[in-house]
Image (cartoon, rainbow, N blue to C red):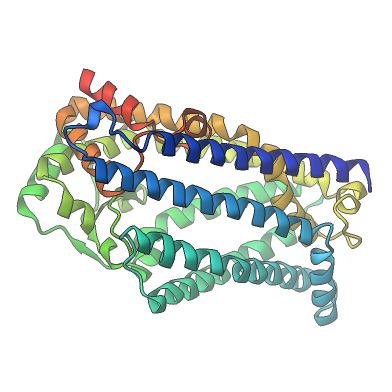
Length: 412
């Protein structure tokens, strides 16, 4: 076992232990506060709803902890257990050395991981979500969605992977810079085509029909000087009872999408306030800022991949005896997250900052009180816990805790 083997095992052990410890803390904290609704919400959320949220949160967290251990076992099986070397042997029997063999190796791994994930997806959907009354999926729809997702992954992922493998072989020491540019272009294209070409494959989108909500939304857009291509309602109730709203696309293809479940729960004024929050993200350039950070970080990771793929110890330390461009890609993307895991709180903190800013923007262009009542309804109806463990929340949560968020809005 090499030095890098020991370093990787230490990183994996630290990341896995930290994830499990945070999950245990979260379950313990939520359970301890299960018996009483926080005073700030007592007038709007009864004890039964609060306890349902606690039980739902604990069930999801315990299941996620099982997934953490499962993922660590798979990673060890792929590396030190010889799984990747075995997959290489299979692809080598089929194809001569070159890009097609590399694509075969990537496809084999993707197929294996998909099969291993299916039991978890089924349990998450048809046991946990079903138990708490959120699942609306049928097994047929579940597997149809899975088939569509795999087809799209093959349609877009295989050409992208082939292009990257070609760049790795043909463009010399600076291939990673060209691959980075390709990655950016690919993301921009996907953002452009997603609203009109991909999303309709999974959901039905129809123009908003509610005259009062539509009028309020259009007045809000006018006040904010914001133009969109359409106001759409998505049949989210076909799959889940959870509600949401989001923007999609960019430039001329921007759309506002409301889940039908959200419109069914909120009053028109509350819908307006929720939309004002989402508008805040765009007007304050949060999306562009996050994309800029993502692209900057990906440049650094591409450079690191370019360095590691030339180092024999990188392969040998992970029990791989057949270095290749495809193997370098695989090892990099399954190993590096173990080393970057402890950076996750920084991203979560940055996201929470943006949420507070979007709330403040919403309080200027809509009613802060309506946003408060909308959030309380969404917390209640989506069974979101009002009492998360503070450390777990700081580490993971992209949105501020309910108490902190409501308190700031009430001051507004």
